Length: 258
Image (cartoon, rainbow, N blue to C red; front, side):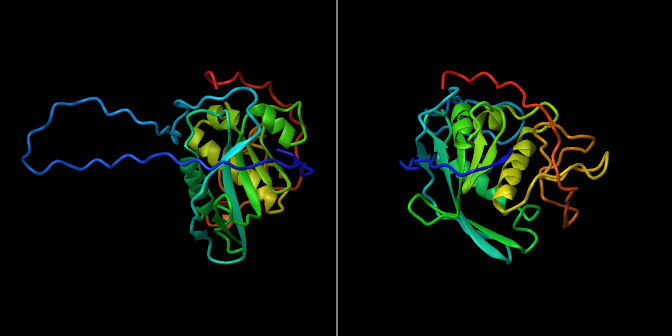
């Protein structure tokens, strides 16, 4: 959650999963077939709704190396400076398709309620070998501590120079006061990318109102209500500059065998 000095990370080793053929509806009047188990597939699934984390597993610390999404995405936003970003997942995090995770990141960052909605920024996802202005990294908690130059914190995420570091523990578990996991993930990504765009932490401007996305909602809402987006009702929502002195919770246990 804090702004820290940049450190390096090796990002490489592209990974792409096989895609399953889509289902097709039966012709009118056709007899229903007896249900049969779906064929096995090696394509893992990243859940996008609800608090259940599906099959995502991770150890406390991963390998420190990453597999990087390869696809080039469309430019999101109607005007402003263009920044290109790549997406990578740390080796050791299990059952995450890096290409699908990258698409989820791209959908969030392209939403008109996000940073590309106001005409100040355009964002484009690029592949492993393309020039990028920043990287979005899904990391284990220990690697998060190393990349964020804050080894004692295995709970939060951060922006460190040109690295947007997303702690897989928060991606899997969310936080207790943010009831919808999918919405929390949108907040988490928008908050850390907001730091890369030059924005600092903000305070709750009005009790009972939506929290600015740059409030440290992972730690506390301070009277505001959860909010995942920079823009609310068509306008950028900001609060007074500053941050609260909230304690960092204890880290979560690893999920599965990793």
